[in-house]
Amino acid sequence: MQTRKLGSTGPQVAQLGLGLMGMSDLYGPADRAESIATIHAALDAGVTLLDTGDFYAMGHNELLLREALAGRDRDRVQISVKFGALRDPDGGWSGIDNRPAALKNFAAYSLQRLGVEQIDIYRPARLDPNVPIEDTVGAMAELVKAGHIRHIGLSEVGSETLRRAHAVHPIADLQIEYSMISRGIEDGVLQTCRELGIGVTAYGVLSRGLISGHWSSQRAGEADFRGQYSPRFQGDNLRRNLALVENVRAIAAELGVSVAQVAIAWVLAQGVDIVPLVGARTRSRLNEALGATGLVLAAADLARLEEAMPAAAVAGARYNEHQAAGLDSEASAAI
Image (cartoon, rainbow, N blue to C red; front, side, top):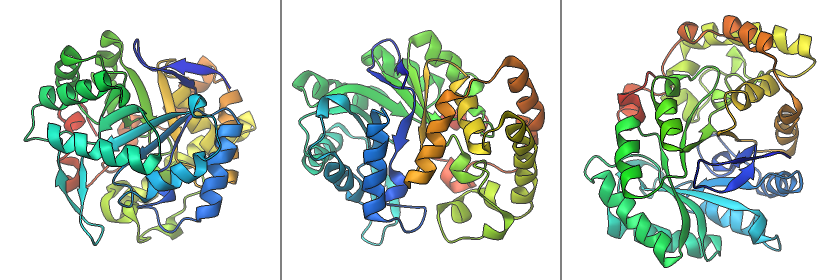
């Protein structure tokens, strides 16, 4: 698999990364054995960047990753960990804590759960409105100096925060949603990343399954994260968005590939400084995603896709109003 460098200071990683959240949390039940088999298949295919969070099912995801990496060459894997989101015993959400003392505590627990001596990329999951970003990044810089983490990343922040953070310590990458249907990063944030030499790890490249080609109106109202928090999966919004997916399906059929493969290839085509993260929970979905790495979209293909799924035609926001309030990136980019 081809590789891409995360910014001017970050690591060289495979051009496709694997997001592990769905193997533990938010998208309904997942099979543990199949999850581990999927991680193994990804590694065998050349995937190197594995993304997790200490709050994904309250540590479950990190322990799952530890089990999957047993016996594997640690030097061939980059582990990206998000921290800061607070959970309660019932699985609810209770805020963000990016205080220096708290993040060092979080890091200590993550290192133990993962069974590693260093975390390759460590990042706050969201901006803490009560803690200056300079304090958070300064504390992470101390972890870099002490050898506990290799690189500092950020997640879902806007241009101003990127500049302030980067002035304290080089930022390797920004993790942010980016897909054919979620284009907010193009309104200034992507330009700032490129100006500062910050890479982008794009999550949600299939918009949580909405543009995977596998979603249908019959699944509306399923009791998971999407039905509860994403207006794009609700009511008339869902019907309108699925109509856009059908436009893409026609183009994908002409290219002899799946809708999901077109959607992933579209993100890959937006720049060599962007690494898509796919949230495959099964080997079959992973194999489909891996097929996108061999798909090169010509300029004419990209133009047709722009007409098939114009950003202005997307119905509904990424998150409901309450959830979006915690996204600093929304301050400088449309959702």
